[in-house]
Length: 270
Ligand SMILES: [Zn+2]
Ligand SMILES: [Zn+2]
Picture 1 (cartoon, protein in one colour):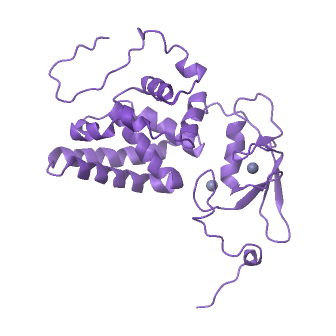
Picture 2 (cartoon, rainbow, N blue to C red):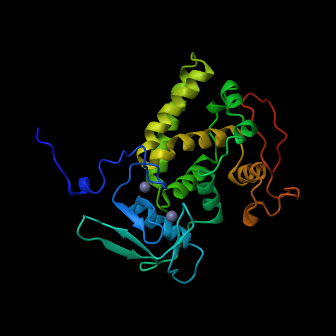
Picture 3 (cartoon, rainbow, N blue to C red):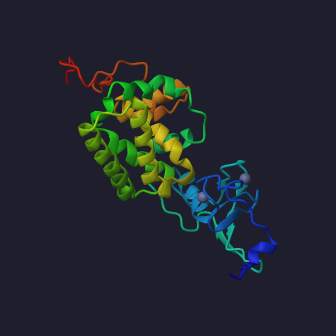
């Protein structure tokens, strides 16, 4: 078989995609592009979406974007380099306000860029598996997952992805209800593998952390608002629109406690 030499070879001798992944999707860089001032490299679609997300709160088109890696102010994205020519996308040239990306989306996306390992102790997924709580579906999973995947992909319309992953989880749960011979550890392992397989082509390098986050959300037994408050409080993050009233009792928005599957009675009142 003939060895194919591409034009790019003389410029960059086979960069190892695992060593130099796109900082946004953590996958191999697809359609290499650079910010014009700091020259950090990203997938074209990743950095383009990023500029839209960064612009979400502006009412007028922004003309620059801060690099997500170094915070340098940049004015255009350089892409399509073939050694002879390149194209340039100026920030804000196709600006339209995107309403779906809220502060909560932003905090979810940020949590994928920070050390959040301490939350494992707070939400305790191990107990979730040991107590067979996974047999009880979460009513809030759809909303949580939709927001999570919107934040990670920075796309509004993610219903197909959400339904795909939820379908995998649902059929896994149906199987578990009939066969309960394996250990909690084996169940957890199987669950993680199935969800990873379903999510990987959409979430690439963020897949493992997505599965961790999913387990923590399920283990919490909380609805999304309550979960956000606990999450942010434990990280010490302040996001006014989410945890502004955290010191007040939640009279009209009760924090739902962990639901024990085998509880005979519940004193939870509306
Ligand atoms: Zn990327
Ligand atoms: Zn940079």
